[in-house]
Amino acid sequence: MTEELRSLLRDELSAERPPPLGDVVGSAVRDGRRIRRRRRFAAAGGGTAVAGVLAVAVALGGPYGTAPVPGPDAGVVVAVSPSQALDSRIPATPQAMLVLLRDLLPPGRTGDAAKAAHSDLQVQMSLDRGRGPAIIRISVAGYPSLPRAGKPTVTVESLPDNCTQAKVVRADWPGGMTVQADLATCRMTAGGSTPTPLALTDEEAKAVVSDPRWGDGMDPALVRAGEQDFPHLATFG
Image (cartoon, rainbow, N blue to C red; front, top):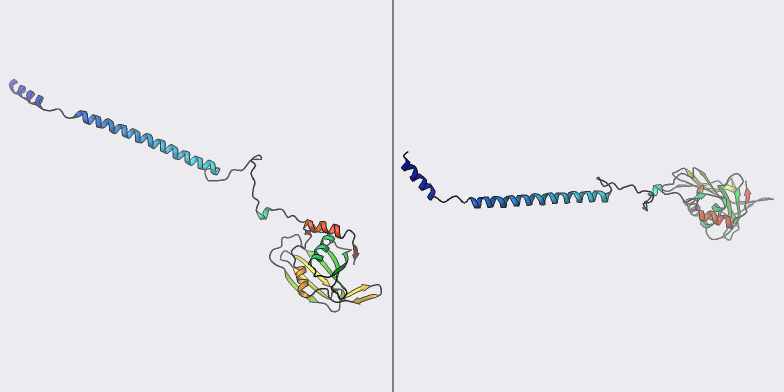
């Protein structure tokens, strides 16, 4: 190639417009700024999301939502399930049993309150419904402290040859407790025995022995009432 030809080529190239590098650079700069802004927003959003998760975890007491165990000074009221609740009953007394028996009897005049000489869980009381006083004896036996669920099985038995137990009405509870009512058809006196009517019908006696308040533990109110109403008791048996 001659020097003249080289000169012509240089002149031709010099006459061409340069490529728009300024726009390409500016566009690249702007794109870079947008990318950096998106990255900053993403980082901030991720931090906020993590903070939110941590806040929820703290509110729930742990990463799995387990409630925190309150300290001794936390002032938190803990709900107690029924199975954990303490029984408010206190040891039964003959006096408390007599109060309950009196409350369960139909209207009439009561008397002859006494307890068995050999047991604090057997008592007696007479009921006069206009035909003379008749004796009722109530006893609690078995395993009265065990929890009672459901309803008792009630049986009625007649013993015509035994006037002090002419009729026996018994409630057998699923937990093992037995409440028994002995209904007499006589009153024992110094001169022998005097015939009397039964104090209760079968249905009335069933209602008495099926009351869930019987047991070797009774409501404190019944025990207090017994101390007031029957401060001194005679014994039988």
